[in-house]
Image (cartoon, rainbow, N blue to C red):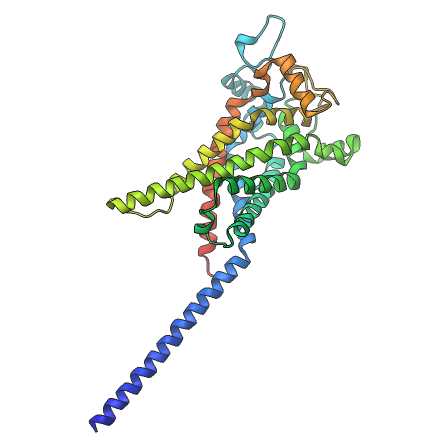
Length: 359
């Protein structure tokens, strides 16, 4: 009887072990299937997170973007100590520009052109993050974030440049419309986005929607490359710092906090913008060629005033000095650095939230 009891007990234990193994295997297969589903839908997740991040960031920094554009398309000097008695500049400093725009156009003036800007930024950041994540997956051979972190800064730069190029070409007409609506001031040349689009197509054709595309691409290749390359480098450095703190008994783990993501994005945006600002000025000049603004905003830029990018640079240097290539630097940097920081923070947060949802 005891022998039979032991055999029964042993058989029962084996049965439980088999059931436990099958249950564990089933859970593993389910987890693997969920991971495959997430990889399958990763492009959609990146697109949604990128669009949300771009929209939030753009709305927050819109006032600084409007001020930056006003400076960039102004031919007259932008600092008081440069002014001559016969030269009258509309905007001479950041504070003065804020006061003038508020007095003449009200609060809404700081969000002028924000609708086409959102139509630009949301698809732009969606395309950008989809392409950069796909590039990292191909380059590392894995969709895992920890494998992406092992890519060299050179690969991050190349990936960022490719992503920026694809995003720029895909969303450029909205960038041009945003610039024109933000630069026109009062009274308006174009009352709304639809009128601006129809008038440009009527007078310049489809090619008019791509005015300044070449300098835009020349700007975005190094800009996006530097931004993503610097951001990834700062993330790696911060993760290593967290790891070192954890190993020394400081607690926590190497995962970056929201604040750390913000600081990394801030540094990346600041460095990239300072490096590429002159090309942004040249791009804006091409975009507003022929825009008949009110005379109080200064001299206008005539159609075909610049025959090429090099001609534009030479003309700006000859007439406005090297400072001309850095007009709007302060509002540009003040805008670009937090814009990049907010974009990266929101993107990381939305990605974390979306990937935590059940498939």
